Image 1 (cartoon, one colour):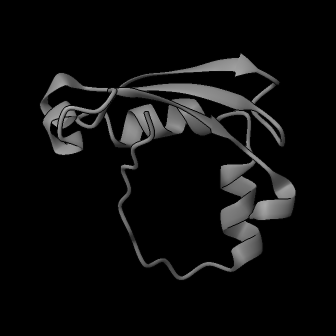
Image 2 (cartoon, one colour):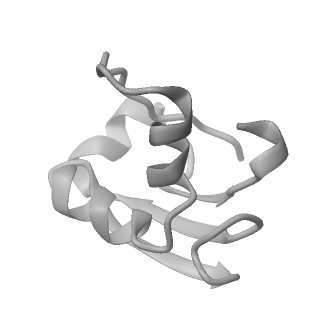
Length: 83
């Protein structure tokens, strides 16, 4: 199953500065620190956290209802070409 969870935040940074955060090996830990009420865990399945990394993301139980009965976990791939 496929589901999406997103939030938007306007920041006063360039695309290159934002991409530096998204392509950082520290991103999973940063997401858990900043959005701990939304995400239960983020594990690196393949890669080192940089480009090409595949993540396993698990939502906290309170957020699972937002997906209308869909799976509460997902895989994500960090791709430099698709930034």
